[in-house]
Length: 340
Image (cartoon, rainbow, N blue to C red; front, side, top):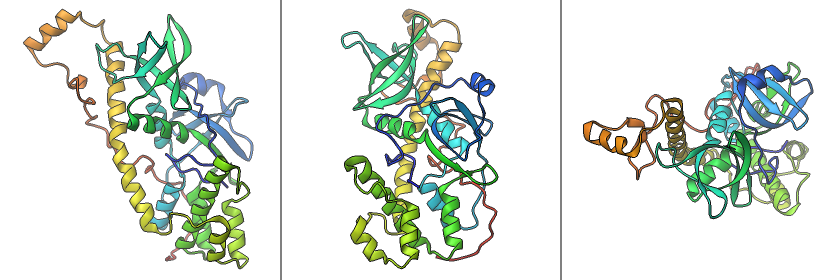
C-alpha cells in the first residue's frame, strides 16, 4: 500500500486535488453502499458517521466507526500514517468552505476573512492548480468555477492539507470495514515485528512514494514489498542502501511531528470562525447601511463574532481544537499485549 498521511502530499495523491461541494441530503438519497473490495475517490459528504465518496463513476457510501487500539503506539503510528475518522474528514470538508473578495482587474477572487461588511462572499475550494486554487462561487444564481489567490501562506497550506485529506484509497476487510494503516501496523506487531522496524518500513515506503511522484522512481516500493523483503532476511541497512535512509527513524520523531501539527489547529480555528461569521450574516436580516453600523458602535458593542478588523476573528468557544487527525483509529478485534 501507499502511505497517505494527513497534510502530506504522497504517492496516492495526484497533483490536482478535486473535491465536490457538500449537499448532504442529495448525496444521502443518491449514494448506495460501496460494494467492491476497495474504493478510491474524493470524500464529498460526511453525515452521522457515513462517508460519501465520489469515485468518478458515481457515489457510494462507507461507514467509519471510532475505536481504540490495544497499544498506544499502534494508535500513534496509525494516526501518523493515515488513519481517518468521520470527524477528521468533516473538518477537512468544512475547511474547504471559505470566503473571498472579487478582483475585477484580474477577474479572479482573493481569499479574505469572512467578515460582515468587507465584501467577501462564500466560496467552496474544489482543487489546487499550481500555486493557486479553484473555487466554486455563485454568480447571478449560477455556480461557476473561478481562480482563488491565497496570499496567506498558512491558510494556503491548510487548504492544501484539507484537499489532500479528502482523497481516499481504502481497502475493505471480509466484514466490509475499512482497513486503515493502524490495523495493518497492529497485525504486523502481532506477527512479532517491533514498532521501530515497522516505523522505518512505513517511512521508507512513504519516501519511495514521494520519489515516484517527483521522479518516477521506486514506484514499485510499497509497505508490503518492504515487509516481505525484511521477513525474508534482507537487513535494514541493506534496505537503506537500496531505497534511502528515511528521516523518520524513531517514535520520538513522530511525536515531534504531531506537536508541530497541533500548532496548525490555530489556523483551522481561525478559518472556521471567519466562515461562521459570514454564514450567520447571510441567514439573518439584510445588513444595515454603513451609517447604521457606525451608529451601533456608539450605542453598544458590536457582535462578538465579527472580531477586530486586524485580527483573524474569534476562536469558537465551544469547539475543542484537538489534533487534526486525532479522532482515533478504527477498532481491532485482535488481542495483544506486546512491547516494542
